[in-house]
Image 1 (cartoon, rainbow, N blue to C red):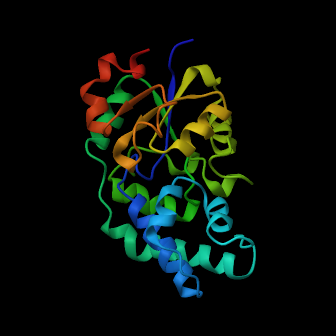
Image 2 (cartoon, rainbow, N blue to C red):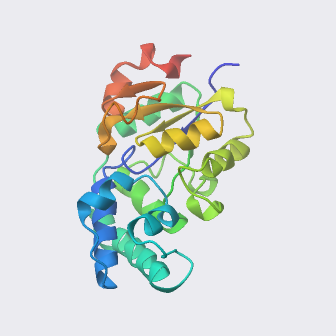
Length: 222
């Protein structure tokens, strides 16, 4: 049918925030008496908080008790402390402008909460290019990535078929989420995952600048 839209992840894709999210989890757990090392939680960044909590401490969830408090603390740390220090991924603004000039619709699909969204987009310096009100976030679904729900919400908002859309993201959990919704994905290494972990993506690039440099031979031109 031809490409009509691109679904965009935020963390690790538009903004260099994956390490900050991991550190926020470490500090959130520590605030409630749980010792969770950075090295243990960092490989899970890209999953929603509802998935991370029970993997780190079995029995915790984000709906009640310590799990809910930890999730809230993590969110506060991202919004109030880490968010203002984050930087965009290389070339992200230029890539988004190129895609828009090509007539592609852009929509966000992220495991971040709706409250974190504006902070992260400002950090990425693309908040003026993307409609935050049209985004699909973990606040819109029962199950976050790697479940397909968030990508499916984005497709519904676009009113498009999976074959008309590609996703741009940075983790293996994004690939699972996209494929579960029937959408192919372009992966970026900027999130800190290696090519073996990203091997099921349609193509892999270093960062938005690398994708932009190869735009005319990339899946974005299909």
